Image (tube, rainbow, N blue to C red; front, side, top):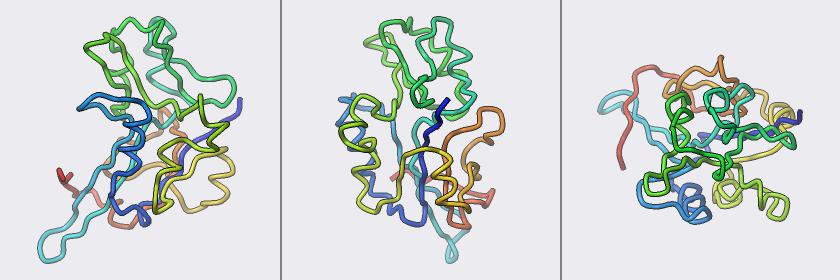
Length: 192
């Protein structure tokens, strides 16, 4: 099966949230629900405090916990590109995928009684060339494509950073070029 994924360069990201806003608009998401989120973390203390930004969405894992937990098959891996997709028509809103994802990705829509998540803009990617979040990033901090090609192009990128759960069980299809401070265990999320 083909495998595609995301690459994120934390040194390039300025925390502008353009990717988050573009995704929200593209998907018509209600207030309080985002498929892509930009988080800001602080390490150290005054006068030596530093911060970094991380843009995250579905990791389109190779071994997704959400797919294993879904009792109806609404959450599934695409045979075409290996992305994790969701079928709204099959979803019963049980939230097993929400509870099983170690990254907190699937979002429950109470008014619709179903779950939704990033689908890597699969329906428009062929025409647009990239998911909306990638195309909208003014700093070009995001890339999307065949996972092996991303890994070859960014050999120093890693999958784990201190502020997110270890990825050994799910094998996320995401690579991150981190600023060294993103590896420090003592961090605080800033609410901006």
